[in-house]
Image 1 (tube, one colour):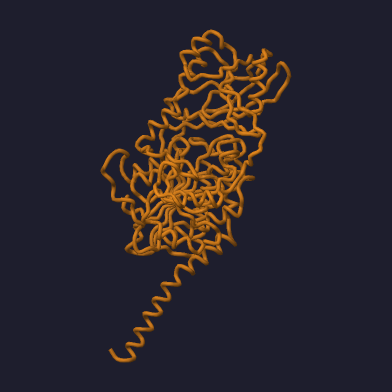
Image 2 (cartoon, helix red, strand yellow):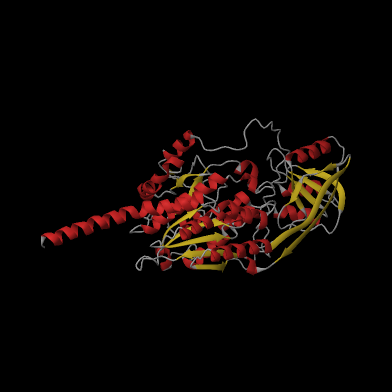
Length: 517
């Protein structure tokens, strides 16, 4: 090789190295511009919550929201956008109107909301209120109350203890809490930042776990119905005045539907229980007009893709997701409109930035998560193989990673590694450019009870982001206050932008993220 050839070769190597080293920083700068300065994430959340909320599984409202999401991502120019069905017998249920009040010994408007998939009242009903404080032993309940419930409304459960609201309703993780999680050396069972299933094989036992939880009161409800009771009132101790109708899951055709069942505020429950204790015999007037129907076409996952540009890697996929369904008493802004909007925004950011990832990037907005991961499990069994079977489809090996958001509207603080120690140095490097935003904390801990569990079960690197709790578990989760007012704009912009950066960098790697085993 002559001197000129050597010189040109060295120039080529230097320029090639320079171009390669600059690719990621340049891409991140484009992502940052789109995510921070040209963000659409709050507009997306507003559409999901104010226009298309709530999105209860099985309902026409859910399907209208799914059509909106599909059309929105088609408008952005996603390479593929499509539905995949997931449940042929999940029923829709919608409230048309309702009212709940005490008419004696004095008038009181009762702050209430009906539980899902309960029966209508067939017009206005009026009856005395009785209190069944403990109904865990059905034989005892039947012995005490048989023949005494006709035409009665039933107050069930214990009266909440007084709460002076000395503790704040909203918080962010402290440095000590984050440090404790970072120092964890095993993934279960004590996660200092969030819920963990411990040693339970969550996915294989999921049907049993959910059925035992969802069906635990069926026999009691059937007894009340057979005895001619008019309605049921219950509460959760969410102060002040929060209504929390989370607890009926009678969504399948085969499930018996309870008589009209209402969640009421803890303060109203306290008043009613005290009146009964004093022998003052409250009288309850109510009505519930609701509609129950089966439209299997409503039960869809929404899938969209940016096709990979590398001929050798485009068949491999980086997946992101969030559950699209919500609970019914509010608009579902924090659970999980925030997660769905963030993941849609991730796709918009990458597409609008003009980036061409090597691997395909796929977003999945899941249905039926609240009823036991119905959407993501159906997807997994269709694409990866059946639960409890050892045979796996080849598509499992094509998924590099799955990232999930479903813990409210709080800022991302890092990632749960879900026991996958091998990915730690990779995520440390990928998150380093965003250290100033305090989003780069990693813990070996598991967190559970959302859709990334499904991917983890199939040994696909599946991760849920660590999020500041804010008021998720005190105010908005499955309550009548799950509204846009509790979604902070800065947190959403950070989440969408940092996840977009993570996803793009994973898509650009020479190899997939390592599996746990």
